Length: 156
View (cartoon, rainbow, N blue to C red):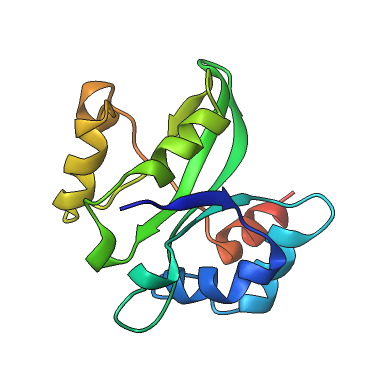
């Protein structure tokens, strides 16, 4: 099946929100602002199928990959793949969406997180060369939520 992969525009936001809303922040207004302002915090590719292959629900935008640039003092130029989602009925048909992120950031280092129970995703990324550095290199993912970060900032 052929997918058209292209950089998302503000007009795609409703579809991006639909695809990712199960785990996104509460405010679609904030997410839309951060992604489509003059200097966006992230970029996003969307996977679009022709009308004749639309989803059971009637959608033609069937996947998205949301990512942003970062820098790692050990690895150099890096990109963080924050969200990668393809509607279940389109999974395994074509991984052009993931390939497009790789092409866009060729030569960079790609980082992403996958929860331990999501074995299909772990297998998908491992089959394409991803290495799980959790045990191999002993890295722990740490997070300061907004309250913790505010508390830290006010300690000085």
